[in-house]
Length: 174
Length: 299
Image 1 (tube, each protein chain N blue to C red):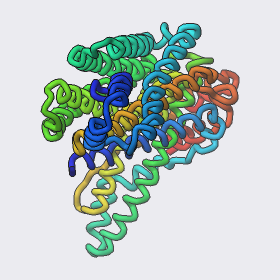
Image 2: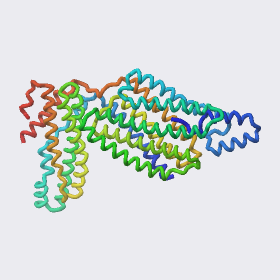
Image 3: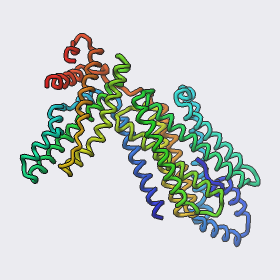
Image 4: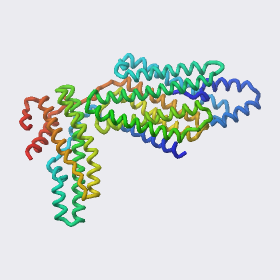
């Protein structure tokens, strides 16, 4: 009776998950303004600094082991926050790109969508690595690609904006 | 959704009418047999509501499914989700076949059972195809999403098939009848694969914040509810054996009823595309990203 019980529990968990996601899906549809207000600022320089090997080596050499572990834990926690913010912005970009596909250049929107999806998936892979880095301060798992990916999607969004509002002259920033 | 031969309400009613005509000692024996079979009601009078419930849960969802078919055809859903349309048509055909068989006298038990098994197999394959069709509506022909979702679905299917094979072996052997065992294995395995695939699809859309159109959500939600209840009940049927057959049957038919109702409700909801308030990319959004870019380029 153990195996049937396991499947009964799994089935009910699956049902709850499906109902929860379907409900969330229904309520978020059409709330793009609300989504946009959830954009979070990501300081890419600060993030790069947090995951920099040299910075980590410098701190390890200068600080006592206990203190270094504590500081490294805090640095990784801060990095996780940045990654989460980048992932959240990428999710918003996916929706923005869907909207942009309807009324601006679909090719640019698709490129932005592609990058945003990659960034979001990448962020999901990076977070466990950062937590692992917190537990094992000596091990280097620096996700430097994430900062580069975030740079690129930001450029893509600005390009989308230029297509939508050509008079704003944002291309000068590129 | 359909009852097993041994639990076909029409067959049960006919045998019950014959039982009423027979003398009291025989009736006692019949009642004892029914209790042994795990019937919930204690007397023939109290079994009529249960019979009505069985009739209702067998016929009503399929009438609603017929309504869904007609309504979805009128709304052009057979062009957008053709495999789902074919699945619904096949379910209706399956119901009509089994209903016709159950009305035959004498009742062709073996033919009914093997028809049920064969049609369950076809229905499971069609349901899997519908899940892939729903996945395609998520991809929206975008290569970036396809690159991610297709391997994910492929590997999920492989893992689920393996788990279904192993667990079916662990759960099988509830009855001595070969056809019932085949049916149980098929029912359990297809439910497990469907639940796994649907949960993967829902998680994928949730993780990447990708929107489905309303009707696709409705189809996926209906299948999700039905498949989850089926998985739980088929596992219970294997665990509890014959005593749980009727309860499992009724629960599965009720789940299918809910599933069809969900499809109908979503069919009549406006089929909005992933809707965007405002004019797509807002100026404030662009300003935010512009500031981000200035900060990046200015470092």
